[in-house]
Length: 360
Image (tube, rainbow, N blue to C red; front, side, top):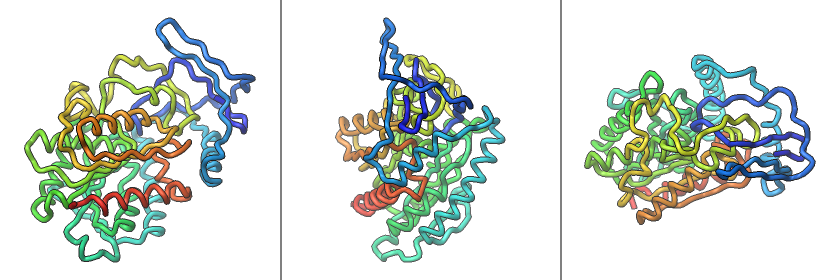
């Protein structure tokens, strides 16, 4: 695929890893420009395509600049887990500071039910919100923290609801169900103070996946379900890759994809030895009837576009009050980038969803 600025991506036998996990960087050398669109197909339906994709005029000028900037990324090569965590932590500290500058709140580091948490409190919280609370689950591919305050601070500020950001245990040291167990423990502790309908859970990427898994575990355990869910770029099926994960890399069109067998689950350090069709690790196979009102958010160059859409469809089939927002042309978790007008719109809609649904 070729941007108007000359960046070319050839896509064949598409494949990609789980959202948030390490991606193979694009080659340093620029590929030759495509002269025309083309598509050929193998006997089994595998597509080999070339598409010229102009810079979209349907997004903001800031988004166009952001998309153009993604084409210039040139990482040195595959990185170790240690380096990934170091890089992610450095970015998280910087972006968390920006979050607190733009969305002033009070942040208290503490533990809840023995789990490390941040308590994020709005500076101005209406009396009607004092009996409401949100649980935030950060992204980062289950092996690092790429969210926490970056997600929790804006929502606490905009919704004017207290947020408990959970630092759940990470893989590969702590595979499933460690993260689920940590969040359930925090939820049960909050049940001592808050009514279940007044508790919401939300997260992005790995945090969105974990939100669904925790809800499936709560229902399986016979515990009361929360009042609302926010699953922002999610997946609910570890048993096979979706269509969008065969097309997009973590940053959308830029990035190199490795072939993935669409009929087999991919080895995943988070899933570990668990059956990928287990209804808690993959809620697509769970009983979804009676799930809380849910907001799902994605974008048209999100590698989890298909996964998010598929789970939204499954929720609606089960009779759940589920809303789906799909933004134009942007890649995975674009709402982490505060300079985009699209991010301002997204965060406002996320906050409004919780103010409208929590405890209703």
